[in-house]
Length: 271
Ligand SMILES: Nc1ncnc2c1ncn2[C@@H]1O[C@H](COP(=O)(O)OP(=O)(O)O)[C@@H](O)[C@H]1O
Ligand SMILES: [Mg+2]
Image (cartoon, rainbow, N blue to C red; front, side, top):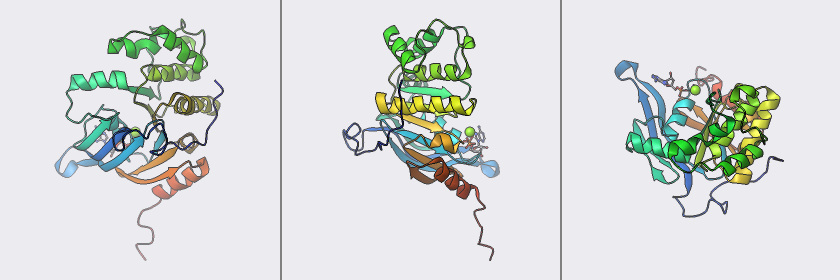
């Protein structure tokens, strides 16, 4: 596929994203709060998230365990509903949308890549890639599936079953599946968590390439600074809030920022 990291910084000034100011975001969260439970046992998983992510950008989300990463991803992807605030996906307000409409929107306009691949073992590779189209009830474009499989380095493997493929190959199938409907956003939750370093790098290069050559928008939760370094920008969550962000950072810079975030907050306050 010949994918290399580019130095292109996606953003509102990028010609591909500068359509109508304020409406061309892939994902927009405004004042998003998510509480679990109530009274004395209430947990504030998200405490007011405001962000807008540009199309054709690659965003990594990091943060300590319990900082709200999964809740953020679920709320942004329409899998969970915020307690307060609003979420827009590809310009569509999903807050208050009926469950049926939300399901339809997720199937056609969102791609998912999970740590555990989540392919259907009884379906062929091609059928797995076409599944989102099948579920969305649209024409299953086999040429498009074949093209995507070639792009992820699995040309000719369409008739195989997931169980016949390596972990890295299975995650490539999952990436092809996530891209097949040309979604507004691909959400990836620890997509390299189950892979060795070399295979992880291949998968990250594919995600990077999907952004650079296909104009995909990727939002990836990871705990790995080396993985986050593939992104155009890194958001750091701490205690349900966006504590920091870094554009185009190296793994070393990202690791240092993570370390600062997880250091005791009140150091020095006791003097
Ligand atoms: N279903 C739930 N019920 C109660 N508390 C939850 C639930 N899901 C998450 N939480 C809490 O919300 C906070 C954020 O969790 P999570 O989003 O999973 O963080 P992360 O993915 O960064 O580890 C944590 O304190 C967690 O215990
Ligand atoms: Mg989590």
